[in-house]
Amino acid sequence: MNLFSELYNCYYQVTAQILRQASINPLTRQQVCEIAETEGYQESAMEIVPKLLQGDWELLSACGDGRFQSRLEKEPFTPFTSLQKSWLKALLKDERIPLFLSDRQLGELEKLLDGVKPLFDPSDFLYFDRYRDSDPFDSFMYRKHFSRILEAIRCRKPLGIVYYSGKNRILEHTWLPSRLEYSAKDGKFRLCAFYRRANGRWRLDVLNVARMLRVEIMNKDVHKNEGIPDVDTCLEASLSKDPLVLEIFDDRNALERTMLHFASYQKTVERTQDARRYRCSIYYDVRWETELLIQVLSFGPMVKVLGPEHFLNQVKERVERQRRL
Image 1 (cartoon, helix red, strand yellow):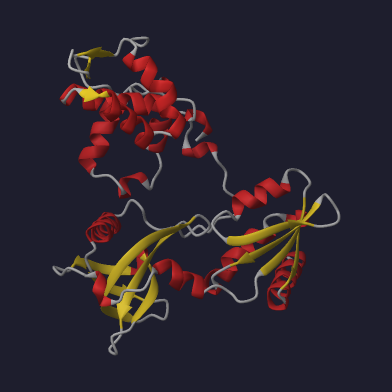
Image 2 (tube, helix red, strand yellow; image 1 turned 90 degrees about the vertical axis):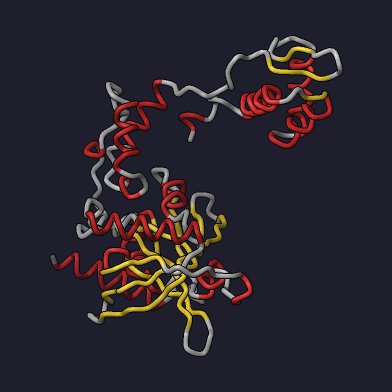
């Protein structure tokens, strides 16, 4: 983030790593250079190593045998600034944070940040383009399922899931979880997971975490030689063959806002003959077409839909419906 881009930069991190290694075992000049080049950039060694070894920074001392050891009594660390603490305190107020941390971890962080004023509060933001039926992030069952999904992804373990589908059917299968995705518009987490068909071929399914009735980690390892496809390749294959084509009027910072808004989509952008207009082609998963439609409409007259025809018709229908209301 820009807020912290100048804090503890590359040179700081490289120097800290050299001092950590030198506090365990004295380092030769060659070893110091290797750490600087590995942890930083090629020019890092040229800038950092002379200052460390020639005593300009007085952080390393010569051992007399051509090696150097750290002068620090304790291992270097990166203390948080007041701004960073304030940012972390604000993140703890996010309703999704408990999904990634245990109650013990949350308690420890609250204790460490006691008395710190949060940088912002969730109530400071007004969201006007979101659905109201977001996932129940504070549900005990939801948190338990989410925790097991994360563990299964990290450990490469299959999951036994009882799932209530959108067609009102109860499904009970074993899926191999691949990744979690979050929809800001829906306020929902989705799990991309592979299901093995009876013929041995793998199929990529996308499951809503809130629709899971039971989640259990299976005591079985999955090996690479089982022919599991690449999730990115599968998701790319599900993209619409006809991209959504938009004309963006670069007024009121519209170009920057649209690029940020559609950052998660595969797209191409080119300038038209009119210097203030841009043509953007977005390749999207047809399953989330309605979500993309709502996002496009949120930009109003700054964005014009050029195609495909069926998407343009949906835009016209929604605009006409809104006019009648």
